Image (cartoon, rainbow, N blue to C red; front, top):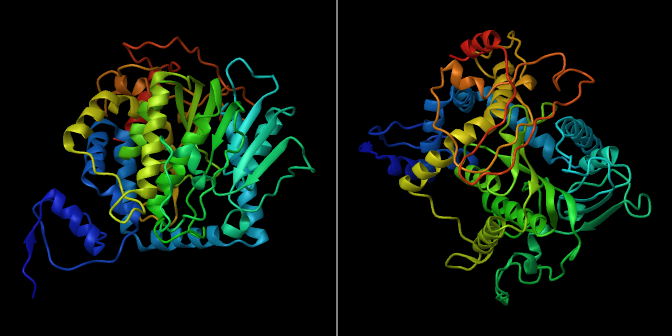
Length: 476
């Protein structure tokens, strides 16, 4: 019989990575046997820096605390494994019927984006615009853009079907001259992503696959949408494992899009887990050169951590923006050529002082921005049939908690106690006949004040305090 070993926090995490444990091992606990393997995303969630962020959020926000409890139940539920396995299998199917279903879902999400005003460009609401859609197929979001801007022109890049990409369903090229599509792997446009030119080693697994061209070079776009996800069925070299490929893809989209967005334009990008270190850093960075809001669709991705960052009035030529673009280039280069074998390396884990500094500077800002998307996911999980003890009979309006409130740059205020009604007031918007959740309602406009480098101001609508107390009490 193996002798139990007492584990520290870091040892705990290393043990879980090595053995694939699906249990949260308490600090100081003992263990000697492995459990069922868990996915890489769960490993990352259990990393010490991400655990530290989650603990901060659970202590400072009642909504996140409730969501985290539901997610922990889900990880322990066999029904959840079966539910998400079925979803993954359906997503990996490439037959025409599944492609049509995938397209219909994203058409609905595109309509939600329009209602959220995610495609609005400051000062160009009714003008002819040029849009860039990265990872375009099947084209539902392009269709939504053209519905809002019938005279727009949309340029796009998407992975070829032969490489595992989705099929284009909307008309393009000769069938619709407004839509211009390049079929290629956006992560392989090497000239776009290197800070300094260099030669590719001949023994690199992708030496013959890097693309030297620069699509749409010299063009500027008022609207940029990045919707790429690392696909399990994407045919690629073995060194491009799913988690590293996700970093390469996100960095590639950010660099390519930010290098082509027009000053003052709108930038929309698909992200996951607002509470993760990498995502939190990205949100903080965008807040330094744009007005930021978070959007989570309810016609898809309800139970997952997926959401969209919507950045308006992007100051793409600012010193801050250019500095972050260089940082994303280093991320792509390290994930592609780093490590001892020169085929990519993972980033170093941040130390506790770095995490604490981020939480001090941006913790309250994250809570404010992410409150709506966390509420939608929590409500969806709370109503799910597969989650044990879910409150399927309760009726909560998650859409009423999400509004296009854009953050301003600077230093956020101190965190509020999660059960404080006064603290919740600045983070909630209740449903009303004129709210975006009502059919046909016009989306409320909020005045966007000028930037300030000294103080971060979060704009929010006033709400009825009695309704607020009643709602806040549900989550205690």
